Length: 453
Ligand code: SUG
Image 1 (spheres, helix red, strand yellow):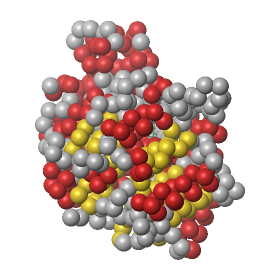
Image 2: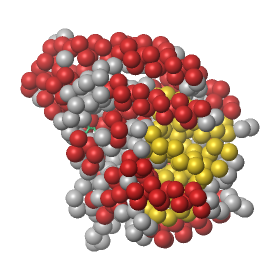
Image 3: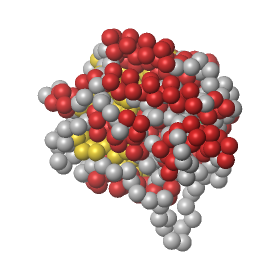
């Protein structure tokens, strides 16, 4: 049976705006208060999806969440009709309204951790929606993520959807953005790299190495719990710590500093605590699981690309996809072309031709990038075999016709200009709901939103 990697991209929601909500994410911090263009943001994302589908890859869509999240504002004590809830929140708790209006759910690399059936003892694909406990505006995402995943992956014979990891921010989990699976091919046994920033239970008497400037978002224990729930064999999971210095430089998720695909690991030499030992362990564990195949480690030295270059260009937030056996493409943000050092490194790597990375394509994702979301943030990777692919809700798969319909849908419903002041506008809530209602039908998902239930 054939196996595919399906990239589920988050569709940018109608309230996409710049609110400076993510301390530790330098793009979000520096663009707070700017005017956004939700229509351009959604179209930029759709152009990337169309390109990947045209490469012959399986591409799918995850719909945005309802924002402003009126149900969450009600839970915070605002009452009355929806317009009254918005007006009272705008007046009495404006920051809460802004947090409840973020379109941050577009970065679906943080929606869940997903592991394929090939690696689970029960032969099912496992999903754990990320709890996203480190940021208020993101912590409200899991209930809708779970509803959406249940609508798409309905068949319990093939799919298991778990509860998010419980606990406080000490048990924070940010999903696929900190998880990479290596395998000789997507259908071969996988080695799972889980990257955390902190331990929930530091060893007594031992001072943990921790960032000083920004907080870590991912706990080791959360990932250990996920690996257990997903029925992964201990031999196929490696847990490693992100470098605190990298977190302090703005690497708030591991996908800002390393990325893997099949047997290729593309990483910055300052990504982890003791990076050489991490790479040696990955190579050894990979070789034990995938006999006859070698993990190719493509190291990026700091003297070629500094941590700062990595964070501003988002080089490692590229997607790496397999376009033919042994041939991979880098799907990178256009910001990588604007940085001379980064662009030269990619060009030389491809010209050298000694790794599977043989082509690079650059995309203008500036609207999302200005909030710290590059190509890889916008997609959730789901490895499915043919039977599993046949079992998912088919309307979410993107082809030319679906792409054309989605572009027309965006143009019908999205504004070209949004500021924080607009978030209290009841017309924006109406427009968003109308758009989402139509989208849920367009994707064949039925009723998935609180306002539809
Ligand atoms: O969680 N930005 C997101 C970006 C997530 C990127 N995802 C990955 N690296 N996988 C975050 O920090 C900014 C929202 C604002 O400031 O308006 C924001 O939530």
